[in-house]
Length: 189
Image (cartoon, rainbow, N blue to C red; front, top):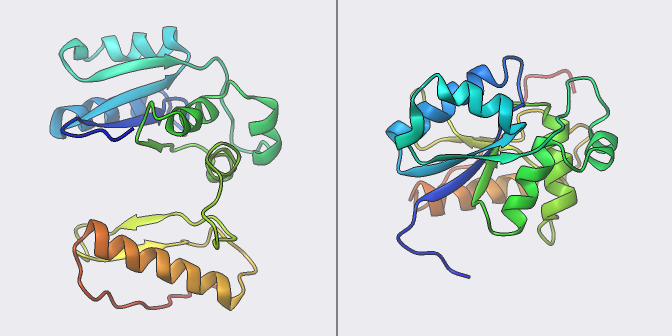
């Protein structure tokens, strides 16, 4: 189903992050005020709605979706996602899969986000490792950074796929006709 002339819907793991849901809800309100998007806060609705009520945000395109569990820092990410199918990050990932959201955001454990994405959304053919990344706005416009140390023990092929993903991202989303690709390493490896 193709959606046109509608707001982008972003499922937000309201329970992900050190200061969740307080800071997550605050960020969601700011995003909804400044951007033409719909924010879907995923988490225990009683807790999330109570936090949202502090902002008088009823006029904003923000809604809540129930998820009774969440994944904490330090839990084994893959096991936690499988054992907690009603965790906020898992529910958000399933919303994307079902077409109920166009993307998801989580400030929770990176491993849990990656595990939920792989389990519920799958991998692109030819891509063996998940990669996180995106724009570096103010310090370096039209620049993206991918992987950011998420993957360890990468083979040259993996680095090549990260470069291709970053290049396509630059072309399609930043309108950079001929992106330059570089390798940055600040680790001992």
